[in-house]
Amino acid sequence: MMNKRSIFYTLSMALTPEEVAGMTKYPSFYEPFARINEEGPYRGKTIGRLEYYDMADEVFEVTEKLDGTGSRCIIIPHEEQFIIGSRNQLLAYNKDTLHFEQQHIVELSFLEMKHLTERLKEAQLDVLENGLVAIFFETIGRTILKRGKQYFPRDDKNDTGFKGQFNVFDIRVFHHSDIMNYLGIPRDEWHFRRCRSRGWMTPSEKRDFCEKNGLPYVPYLTTVKGSEIDTPEKACRWLQQFKTSTISGANCEGVVLKPIERCDDYRNESANIKTRVIFKLKFKDFPKEWQ
Image (cartoon, rainbow, N blue to C red; front, side, top):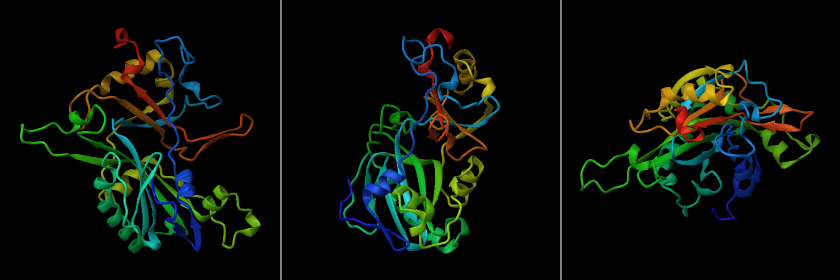
């Protein structure tokens, strides 16, 4: 955990580590068919587990689900500041000399994020003005979870060192107005011109951003229409084409689905729902006799 005295400054406003961590924590994935073969709340349900969300005509980007540890980097480009963290903790602040490590996250990403912060400041992108960028990535490596060895097999008995990498899977831009909203500050106390939230990048924007900045990203597989995978049986049959990992050549854990067009948080006022729509399908979700 970061030192509580550390402060993240943005636009003459100081954010505590707790506020930064809460505002940029990645939302949970929906697992529509988890435990479909067991007695439980999902038995026999369709992908509509996210109630009130009609996904039949939605088109999804499909990426490989990597078996690593969720990570993030929060950047304020114009002030050359960034924080690296896991999903639940902040680990390293580039203005602090004291860093914490967890699953090699800081080791693998610190220099790349430092260079990215410098490039973004030089670019002076309008979309990043008055805000911060949250980059979410999966950190994989030999000693990280059970599939780590599959991603980086040892060449011989003398190959004993650690090997790993990070892969970006999502990017969100927070404007100053997003920060003020999160902190609950009334709008009549905002001392700046309110601008529209940029929100989540689309899948194509994310890939373009990563390619232009030399960042590795999770393997893109294909697109799929929601109506093709809206029952357990259909989803299981469709999933079989991705049994092999594109990174390791070993067994693939599953896939992640994100809407191509509707990338901002899904809202349903009558049901009091506000959430990021992300689904994951795993091979282990389905009975072996189906596969």
